[in-house]
Image (tube, rainbow, N blue to C red; front, side, top):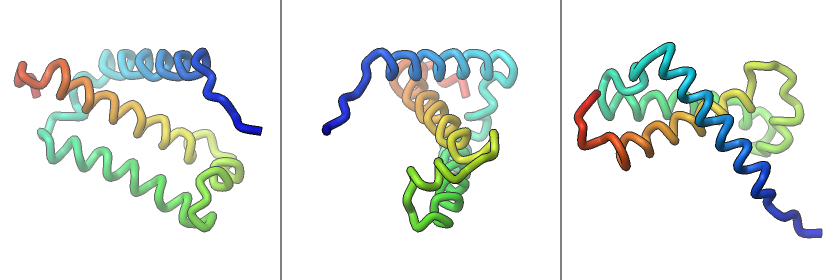
Length: 102
């Protein structure tokens, strides 16, 4: 049976990400881009490296790796962080990039 995407669940997920980004920006400001585009890329790369290292142990099966991970700051936390960082980069380029506020 083919699974359908749940618009409601995706909207809730997106809203949670946006709220997390806003809370983080209140605490940390624009530290994610303090060192410019190279620094922002390296931030993304570090998250990806963490994800890659965890999934590699499960033969690159991300679903298995998520299921096997029991730590609260584990794989899903890294995936959520990466998703939020990607949203920050997207928002900066599409909405704030011309302000040169890095």
